[in-house]
Image (tube, rainbow, N blue to C red; front, side, top):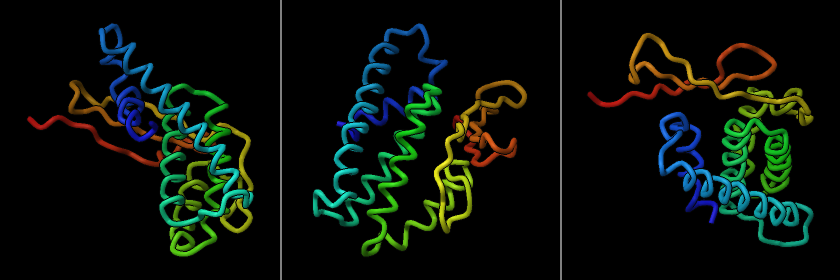
Length: 172
């Protein structure tokens, strides 16, 4: 369910202002919340896997857990909720456990690096204590006029330095 409804969550974040007061908005909101709810249920399963209750720890599981992290990061940005930030931190813990196996151990350092860079982790990659502070914000920045000048900027709560910029422009 999460994978089917994830585009509505992302669209709610990226096009939220455009959807306001349209007949589509309630449907997008409902589907976005279904996505987050499904991710929360999946996180419970993955935490059981990380504790060894379930034995399937393969690359597909690692990649799906990574998709859970993406959903929680989007939800934290969209809803500005500490609950979603906590879910993202729990997901990082699961990724660490699952990432100790097979090919996933080669992917984990980059994920931890990005998490540390965004403020999700308190210190360097070695211990990587999970931070308890809000870790990122997602703010649209308009330069000049018109939609073609709209940029979305992720910033860490620890610094004012932009961490990721994605320029959004319509083909003319």
